[in-house]
Image 1 (cartoon, rainbow, N blue to C red):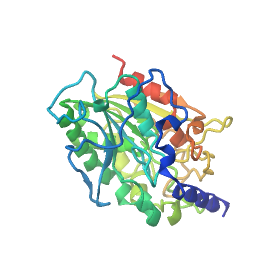
Image 2 (cartoon, one colour):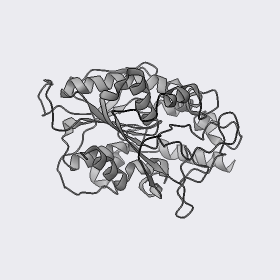
Image 3 (cartoon, rainbow, N blue to C red):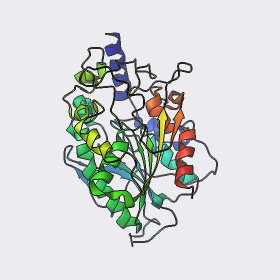
Length: 350
């Protein structure tokens, strides 16, 4: 009951969120200013960008991106840098919204802007809407609308629209959590490894998640907490390491070329506490530990889920300090200056 009460408090905090608290980028902590710039990354797509509809939610995708110069139409121009597509994880957005206070990936993209990228080279895809539907339908968090199967066609359309908009033949992708495997699955389905020059995979569920156990102690399975039961769409894809999705995807190669890969992930350390509520059976900021079990109820260690065979990786601890809302490492790692720098250096290293 204590865990249920804690989750209820978390939900209340999110519902009470006032998006205007984050409307001033200068109020965001932990954002370094190595090259101060007056430019602020936007939260819209260009007016002539194609409208891409999420059929399960019945709403257009969210996103950010810009024409090469304000007021000019797309003309198939090329740039000196490969455009970067930023992808958030499950239950998140590409920037804070009235129903989601996180959107930390926008801060990561702003770091790229501050360090020399143009707004026309930075694109964000919000493939699950503004998350306002979760207020009345919290089980959408684990449902088909939030599944990889639903997101892949949206990413496919978005990538090709960005390529047409920029005239680029390639893109880089920086993805967090579910965004990692959505990107990998699209690349696999379309054999798009020539298109994606580099993939920065931050905390991806490449080998499953811990939140789908049928154990009563797994409070994420409660409807109010998302309904992550073994038969939900998301748990069907990620509830164990050998689901049909993961078995097929990983058997094809976890880091096939010529795409370059970098994995950035949390690892456990007792002091300071460094859990991860998606993979580690340990306290992660606001969230107590859930059993280390898969969706069948079998004991399973998901702590290495974010790794990709054949890809270099960098481990981080104590990332909860960068999640200014719930103190979680899983979300904090996306808002970490060290992670921003690692992603930037990887994409800009010859």
